[in-house]
Image (tube, rainbow, N blue to C red; front, side, top):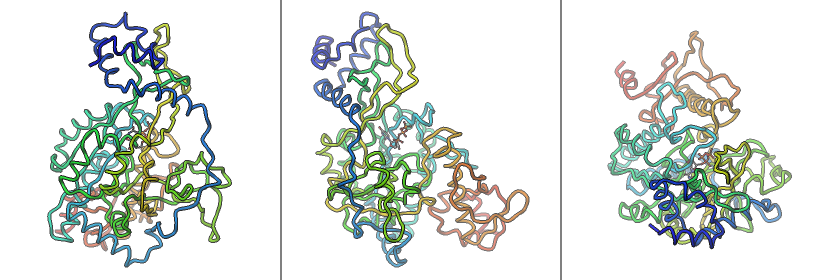
Length: 501
Ligand code: UTP
C-alpha cells in the first residue's frame, strides 16, 4: 500500500487533490480503505484517463459514412440461407471440437445492470419462468447438454470449460450462488471465475467523483476489460494447460444464448477464422444496435450513432438492408488470437458512457443526480475485431437466439417479460414442430407462436429444460402425436414418464 504522502503527490500531479478533501473527517478504517483504493489505481495513468474521458465526452462521435462497407460476402455465413449439407457439416465439426475438449465458453458477467436495477448479479435474476430458473441455472444446464450431445456423437467423455468474468460487484455473490446450488451439477473445477479491473468515474471536466467522503466512484472497465482481465488472471495459461483452443464469449443476459453453439463454432473453425461474430438481421434501419461491417477495409462494429440515418437505410437490389448484421455479443476467438490481442489491450478504444453517478458535493452533502453528471470510460469486447486476420460473421435467426434482459419490468423492450416470453414461445414452437398438440387452459389447441414483443399476449407456458433438449433436438420421440395441456414443464423427470407411457 502507498503512503499518504505518495498518494498526495500523485493526486496533485494529476490535478486530483480534491479526492483527499475530506481526509481530516475520516475514521482510521475509512482512511485505510481509501488509501487501499488509491494504491490500486494506476495513478500515473490517472491524468491521462481523466483528461481522455473529458475530451471524449466533449466531442461528438465521428461519422463513418464515407468509409464503411458491409462484411465481404465470402466472410459471412447464414443459418437460414446455407444448404442443409453445409449446416450439418459445420455442426458436426463443432461437436467434434467439443468432444475433444477444445471448446470453452466465456461469460461476461461483470456489468452492474443499472437499467435492470437489482442489487445482485443479473445472472441470478429470475424472469418468471414456470421453473423459476435463473440465467446462471439455464446456462449451466445448456453446458451439461452440449457436453452430452458431443459425447453421444463422438463417444468420448468431454468438458466444456466455463470461464466467468465478474467484477467487484458480482464476484462474491456469484461465487456464493454457485456454491449454494452445488454448481448446478457441474464439476466446480471446470468453472473458473475471475475479476475484471475497475476504473474511476469522472466529471465532465475530468475530476474523479467521490461517491462518499472516503470512497471514489468506481465502475468496471467495460466488457472489453476482458482482455486485460485474461492477462491479470492468467486465464490464457489455464486454457493452454487444458487444451482449450476455441472460446465462445457471450453476455449474461441473453436468455436464448446457445452456449458453445456447435454450428457457430464449426462454421468459424471450418473457415479458419481467428475471430467471429454471430449476428442477427437488424429489425429496422433505426434499431439502436451496433452493426458488424468494415471500416476502411477493417472489420469492426459500428454504432448506430456513428452513421447517418441515410446510410442505415441503404438497401441492396433484393430490398434487404445493406448494413443489417446486428451485433448480439456472441463471439468466437481462437486462443492464439486472444494471446495476440492480450498484448494490445492498451491500444483498445475507450468509449464514453454518460451516467448518473451519486456523489458528495464540496460541502460534503450526498447528492443523487437526476441527469447524467459523470463519465464512465468503457472498453468493448468487440473492439478487438480490427486485429483479426481472418474475421467471419454468422447470421442466425433472432427469435431463436437473441432476447436480452436489459430493462426493468414495464419497459417496452428487453424486459423480464419479453425475455420470458421469447423463451416460452420458442419452446412452444419446438414442441409443436416435434408433433405435440398443446392445449391452453380452455382445452383449445395452441398454434405455433412467432417471435414475441412486449405488447403480445404471453405464449403458452411450455418450458423445456435444457437437460432435455439443447435446441429443439430429440423431442419427437417424446412428444410426437401427444396432446398435452399447458402449463407444461418438460424436465428430465417428465421426459422419463412420457417415455414409459
Ligand atoms: P451491458 O452493456 O448491457 O451492461 O453489458 P449491464 O451492466 O448488463 O447493464 P447496464 O448498462 O448497467 O444497465 C453487456 C454484457 O457485458 C457485461 C455485462 O455483464 C453483460 O453480460 N459487462 C458489462 C461486463 O462483463 N463488464 C462490464 O464492465 C460491463
